Picture 1 (tube, rainbow, N blue to C red):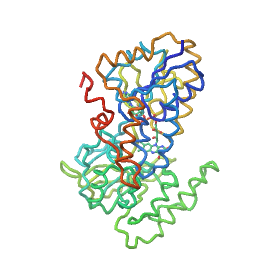
Picture 2 (picture 1 turned 120 degrees about the horizontal axis):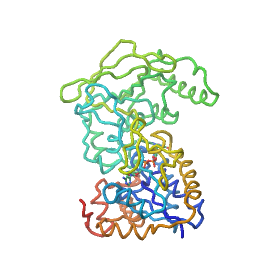
Picture 3 (picture 1 turned 180 degrees about the vertical axis):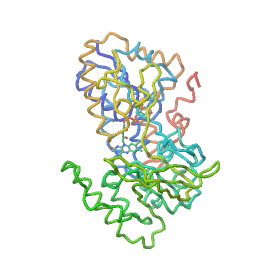
Picture 4 (picture 1 turned 90 degrees about the vertical axis):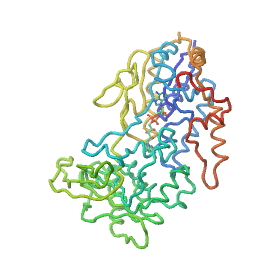
Amino acid sequence: MPISVAIVGSGPAGFYTAEALVKTLDGGVAVDIVERLPTPFGLIRAGVAPDHQTTKKVARSFEKTAHRPEIRYFGNVEVGRDLTLAELQETHDAVVLAVGAPFDRALGIPGEDKVGVIGSAAFVGWYNAHPDFADLDPRLNTEAVAVIGNGNVAIDIARVLVKTAAEMADSDIPEYAQRAIERAPVKDVYLFGRRGPIEAKFTNVELREMGVLDDCAPVVDAAQLPDAAGEMSDRDRRLKEKNLATLQEFATQDVGERRKRVHFRFFTSPVEILGGETVEGLRLEKTRLEGGRAVGTGETFEIACGLVIPAVGYRSVAVAGAPFDEANAVVPSDDGRVAPGLYAVGWIKRGPSGVIATNRPDGVAVAEYIRDDIGNGTKPGRAALERLLEERGAQVVGFADWKKIEEAEEAGAGAPAPRRKFFRIADMLKVVGTGATRRSAD
Ligand SMILES: Cc1cc2nc3c(=O)[nH]c(=O)nc-3n(C[C@H](O)[C@H](O)[C@H](O)COP(=O)(O)OP(=O)(O)OC[C@H]3O[C@@H](n4cnc5c(N)ncnc54)[C@H](O)[C@@H]3O)c2cc1C
């Protein structure tokens, strides 16, 4: 009997695992991908910036995997809501957790609970039409926004906030977000990093984009830029020196007629979010590096801003029934082996770092472990899962249903936008056409 595997989560880690299982077990596996949203592909759809459509094309290869006869997609089915992990472990020989890290890491400073502090996961979800965040209504009635963090997520957020409507025309940003951004009086976006330009995690392509925008100029203080990258491997030095050269160029750029500015402020650490119930400003402390770590100098300063977006990393949460390492916010595992028959891949296994392709080796390794650990399938798998979901009245969105949703999104877009995303699950289900028989648990 083929080995039955349930993968929980259809992001890159889930799909790379499905692909590897099909290759490794060559005809001897049946894979069921269970995804809480009707739409597949995790952060490719809901994280990767709406104006970076080329990056999203990786989903095309996942689509080929989804069409393989061994694979079945169960969209709109959430583990923990529609069925439990224990139930999946009973029906399937192996369960692979690929649920990602959907929440924000907190800054841990006073004032973080004020209205106008919105974590990057929520803000990015909002401008990417994630149903959980479509109603976020971020406080954009401000001239200044502070983004905390020096990685690509921070730079994505800054760019989306300052690009013109014409520059976003070929993106898939939802209309509600584009309108809100267009109407907002935002002029200054600050990117604060605790450490320096060498330690910043921006990749050069993303950084350079900031210098070629229609109505926004990058602002960099040349005094914060070192002359050279310092001691590190040749590869790292090449990458860091590229960023340094880009920042040096920014430091000499004239703002000219451009109405908006993105300020790169290194060696600054937020210490308090200021205001009453709502955000009015941010107090920061200047830092210096000691042994690669940022330490406060005691010198503080304030900026006025109405929105603070911490982009300092993502965080996983426990899946009921699976072990969880609270300190590191991951499912603890031996390279993906969690417990007999239970595995983890991607951000829930490693923590929230790396690009899409970084998740691939996780899937390859776990596929081999499943082959070695399980040998032959003994559990009923798909048929039992289908029965269970039917009993629960779950409205399962299959891959063909998702393709209908996608077609409707593409048909609804005005050129040059690639698609007009649905942001309500009910609207997606309407397209699928099986009516609104929702889960009995709702
Ligand atoms: C804002 C942002 C921008 C990024 N941009 C890029 C980029 O431009 N290029 C790049 O290479 N990488 C980018 N990345 C990194 C990349 O997106 C991640 O490496 C990758 O998505 C992690 O894969 P994952 O499968 O572990 O998690 P995810 O992509 O988060 O997938 C997890 C999936 O599990 C589902 N799920 C969660 N809980 C349940 C449950 N209980 N039951 C069923 N399903 C569940 C979720 O709905 C989701 O679909 C970006 C990341 C972020 C946060």
